[in-house]
Image 1 (tube, protein in one colour):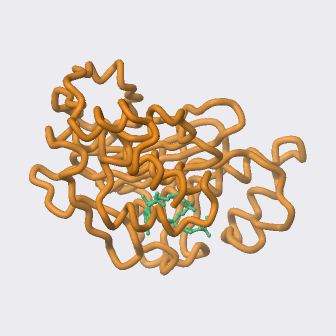
Image 2 (cartoon, rainbow, N blue to C red):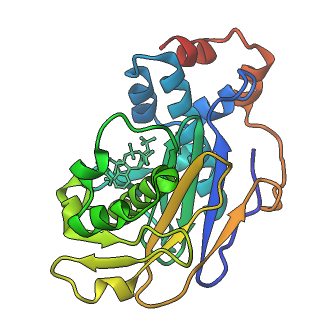
Length: 268
Ligand SMILES: CC(C)(COP(=O)(O)OP(=O)(O)OC[C@H]1O[C@@H](n2cnc3c(N)ncnc32)[C@H](O)[C@@H]1OP(=O)(O)O)[C@@H](O)C(=O)NCCC(=O)NCCS
């Protein structure tokens, strides 16, 4: 499948969302998009559902990024920082992206200017005091002031904002979760309130809530200097896609569902 190259407006971060559980008919196009390394990673998942979700997540990510660059998904090459954050190995003009997945849903943030991080979580009851383990003292204090019926949502707002920030920052778990504070309230724009050793950081980072289906919470973080950014929710339709002839490999796969590649994907 090939599409017209996509563009991003000034100070916009594009947000994509898609389901990770797809019919077997859709699987071949994602399998063929993967690199050999990604295919090998897929094969290491113990559970089939996780394997297929990884394939659909990474395959669709490749398709989308390929559409911004006008390059077929399979030809993209990713590099990773020491904490595992993927980026384009060669990106001129620059294109930043970050993916998150939870409970069968994936979201992707794409920016042509800013380092971005994104996180979504499905709201599920907590079995232990997760905030006590992971949140900063002032975040814990703020959570203590939340009414019992609102606790879970406030907890997940805090969690996803922290995680989006960590993912945008790129330092992974080497950035202590107590070294920064995020706001937890539902009204107004979320904020980075403090970053240890960097008094300018709260003005330089933007955090935004994601609009998601009921039961999910999510946030996007971007290092924008002090520029305002807004989110543009994209879908295959709004991206004015142009469906073109499927590549030969995918046509062969689709014509013959019991083919080697499809079998490899579902039985790896
Ligand atoms: C990757 C990480 C940053 C987030 O993992 P996660 O929340 O389980 O997973 P998400 O679905 O949000 O994101 C996974 C995706 O982020 C990207 N990613 C991987 N490493 C990353 C990193 N260091 N930074 C940013 N993005 C990363 C990848 O695209 C990955 O997708 P893939 O698994 O299909 O390759 C992980 O290092 C982690 O475990 N972080 C901290 C967890 C934690 O304790 N959080 C507390 C928050 S209060």
